Length: 258
Image (cartoon, rainbow, N blue to C red; front, top):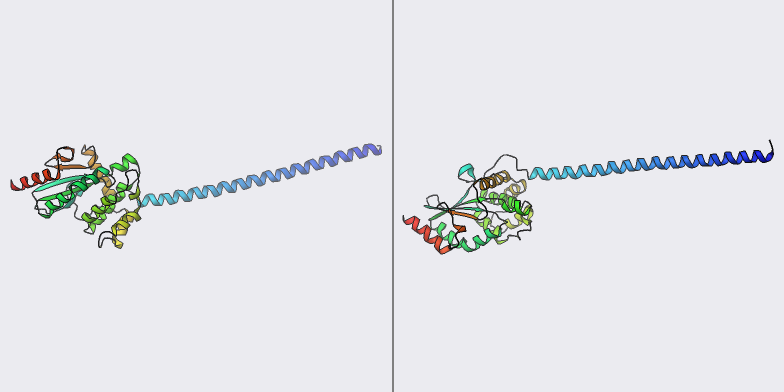
């Protein structure tokens, strides 16, 4: 074999060796990428699982499938009404309301002083039923959270005062601010003696959430179409465009004389 042929074969072997080395290096990089990608996938999966677990914990706190715990003193069928006023009052006003509902706030603003006057005089008893209509229409959970907090205030004997505070600080209808328990607890500070550890626990644990859900189901099964629904003598006086606070007062006084 000539020297030239030997040099050619040696060069070919060297090129082949270089090519094989390149292939081995490429294979190492490919394996490294696979391992790295797998590690990233595992990390992402761990993050996702962690987020899901955290959200699951949040859902449990607002679980509405637990036992129905009625607030203290609740009356009526299934204990779904919060009563305000003396049991001896001859007249009863039944109010279905949603703390996120602007129309409910407008009703409260117009009729509150008259209703309180009649209640204080022992002529009228009011039965409040709390619903979550706006949560269903606008999304969110502020109606339910606010209703639960109001029920917690009832446990503390502070329902009426806290009821008024919620309406006085009602957010815009599309703003689900009442879904924040810290906001509801902050507002409790406006009611003397309400912001206690027991109240905070009741709010944060959603103690009365299932009760609120049951109350809303009763509203739906009752065939009512909107909030507020205000019943006096079996009629929805809120739907009566001629109704005024003065007219309501006359009706209550007439019933008490009868």
